[in-house]
Image (cartoon, rainbow, N blue to C red; front, top):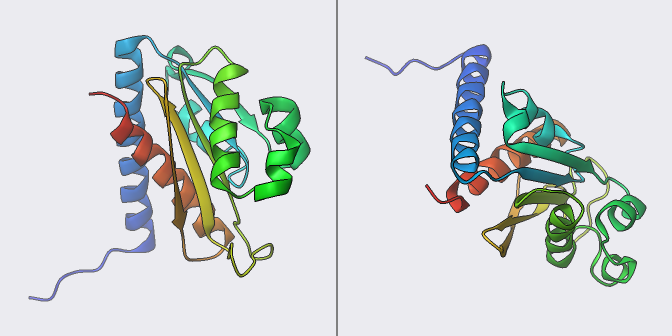
Length: 175
């Protein structure tokens, strides 16, 4: 018997269920410690904050979201030094880490996540092609960061960024 393939709507339903499951676990872990989450987003334009606040009761664990799409917004809202952006570029590990740290400094949250990347279809370079995303998470007083490359169009890169940011946050939060 040949395996059945899932339709697009079935795949989307599975994707939504997995995202909701991750968010539920994140919320439970934050609530258990009475911690709040702040997000700092560039390439996702607030998608992570929307996903968090789509969960009923999120006001108990989601403190605020910063959409810092421009370099000026990163500096003004999160305190990212303009020199850091000039030296490394907005899509870089130092800037992602500064965004995550700034989200904590400029909020009442104890946990943060930050994303900055090239969603495309334009804006990519040889060293930072479309699909390059830097992530940073501040959990338990420690900042973690990493880069991922995602394939696909703008929507696919942004959706993959959302999924990965939350999946990795869940892995960093103590159970």
